[in-house]
Structures are given as C-alpha cells and as structure tokens.
Length: 106
Image (cartoon, rainbow, N blue to C red; front, side, top):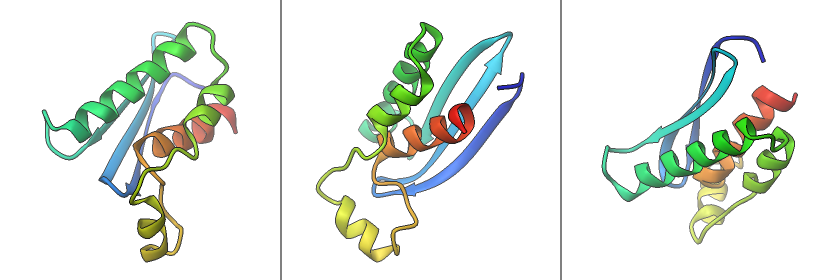
C-alpha cells in the first residue's frame, strides 16, 4: 500500500459505515465510523477496526484478518440482504473485512 488514505462507504444492517485505511509514516491505521458518537454501534466499529489495524501492524497477514471478519453476520443480516439485492455488507465486521481485502490484499 502506498503512503495514502482510502475511505469507502458500505451499507450494512446497522447503517452506513465509513471504513478508512491509512498508511501514516509506514504504519497502517484502520478506522471505521457509523452512527452517532458514543453509541454501541459506533464503539463496535471503532473497536473492530482498531484491533484489525493492530493485528496487521504486528504481523498478522491482511488476508487472514480480512477472512476472519468477512462473512460475520447477525440476526438481521439475511433480511437486510434480501431487501437490498445482496449488494451490501453483512455487518460492521464484514464491511471492515471487505475493505481490508480490497485495499491490502487485491
């Protein structure tokens, strides 16, 4: 990955999530935002993205991190997918995994 920042928006059952991957001074940072500050949804997005970034910075292969996150679902994922013709992320974790794979693996 070059020294730059990418941000992509995904629709998921919890709302619209923005996943940012940045390479700052050779260190990878992953951040995700969704909903309002302080909500459980926002906390989940921040924690998942921060832990994914830490794992990759400490040597975990990006593909393994992406595979661990991609496909994570919850009780509303199937209904959400059906309403949106399948062109959406399954969850917060799935959106972050998809972006890691898109930016760091492909």
